[in-house]
Length: 211
Image 1 (cartoon, one colour):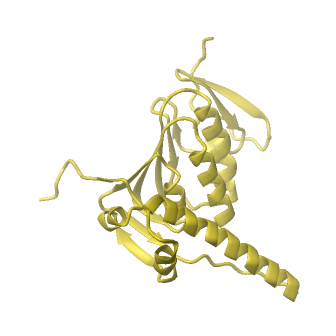
Image 2 (cartoon, helix red, strand yellow):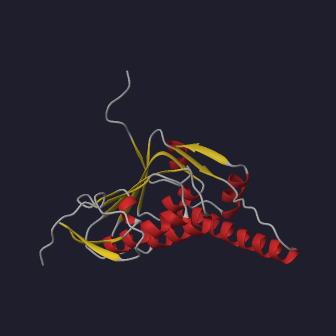
């Protein structure tokens, strides 16, 4: 089957929920009109860019593109620079990446804070640029309502935070208690420090050194 390439960035902005098939040299790619046109994505290198906070809007744009990309053969690259964000949406992105049938490499530039640090753990290869900063901390949230509502919200936040801690512990090889202590202290790490603790597989060095 032959496909005609059409840039995702050139896709029309609409409020429609129509699913559009966009052809590329690497096979069919899918965009959700009004969402995927805003997702920075290079089909030729099979690279998705996450350069924003982790939100429901990002999840809605990321999942269709990632899942269709994963339905075709070839390694997937994700370049990420994010301050973190919503826990549930971050865990959904983590689950999608962790269950991918293709090899996924995530390279973080700038910073990988909070939920971005959790998403990083889903990759087959976890890479930090040498000046990238890494941070983990306890989750936070706010809710108003009756006592039962507050209790339910607190319980749910505790469960999702425990899931995030287990992800960090499993990928790093650290004990759950050690990860919990690092999280409580809101720990900031350099790329090399993160690699030493097992949160990263590789530190990407600059080819050009500053004199």
